[in-house]
Image (cartoon, rainbow, N blue to C red; front, side, top):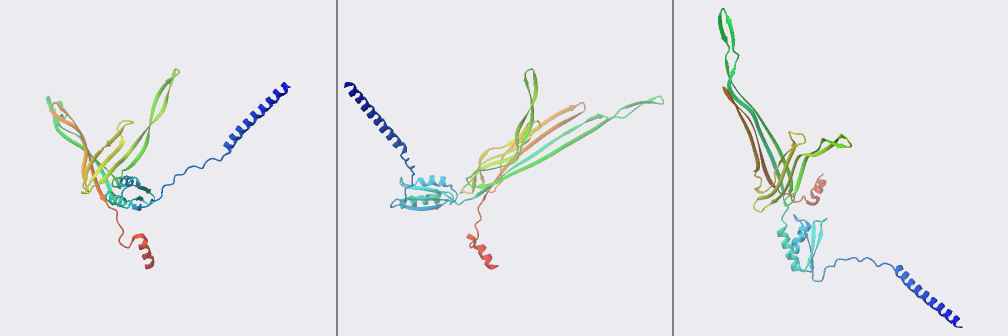
Length: 324
């Protein structure tokens, strides 16, 4: 009888344990089968009560720059929405704050103007030789009819040989005031170079290439000022083949200046000269070689042309069609 009772208790325990595990497993399956929660989408708050919305059309400022200016006059509840495709920003805040932002933007966002920058490299060189002296013109000694005659003599001579050379390179670019721009005109050249490598008791020549950029480049950032001057950062550069293999002749300048509108201004230069003097018994001469480089800058404000009255929005085209 006791064995039957023990066996019955064991069966009941097994049944209870199985049911418990089934319940836990069922709960786990139910959790896994539960659909995932929908992703949270943050929707910008709509215009609050008492707020005013106004759109501002940008002139020279970018949407990011205009947003930084607007933040200085916005309240903690104000918002700025960028609309770069339309060239506008939307301002939402209390009416007095919106008016303050619009006034600040009108003061900080002037009418757009362009600036044309021209940089000119002028090169000049001179080489030659000058000398003066007495040279042997050929002395001949002869005996004629028992007399000794000497003919010929010294020759006094001089020479002045000179070679002049000059070159001009001009670069120009147009950009909006306050915006950086660059231009590069040239070519990328591969110069072959051979190197000898050793290994395993023997060696071999290995070809290699040095890539060089030859041409003219110009980087500028102009800023037109209210007093008629132009604040300008400029970096011109000219590269060409050098006299030696794999060498490059480089002429470049980097400076930050303020110049008058439309007035050529020298901003740099270089002068080199070499002179060698030689003397003879009856004479003197010299070899000379020199070069000079002058760099001139000219910046000019170019204002956009506005169409005459009545020609905006395709009105001129419509009038032409009606006239035809």
